[in-house]
Image (spheres, rainbow, N blue to C red):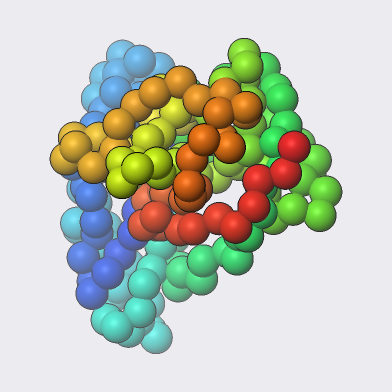
Length: 199
């Protein structure tokens, strides 16, 4: 597999969001795979991309997508339109996505099992992990919980854990009925509500 990774960063009002967590992931990824830490100048990249984007509007939300190896390989700034996710189909898989690989073929294969649902909710070793592109948060009695063993330790998940907004715990498919609500979180999403989880 080609050692290409990517970051998707939310840009609001011309500013990149949650850069501390994105930098941390890039630094740890490049140190592990290449033996050196790549420090990507996200702020400079955002400013350069805005200058190149002839129709950039500060009142819109954009996604900065940076593909990297031991160097920055590709940069894109795209206007962001959230997917309409209403339902999740539970699927089981023994998959490793602990790093944010640019190649998502295995994830896409699982996504294709969603049937009539909007996305999949992946179960590994009997425990809920993530959807195809987001971490999940479940609420109960005013508290918010996220799976202790996600496929990918997302940047929004890290931020919310560091602020004490969510707690980690093991969640089985059978446990879902004990919770009141389900939400998706990722670098672009803040607590996006899900209507239904299908077994």
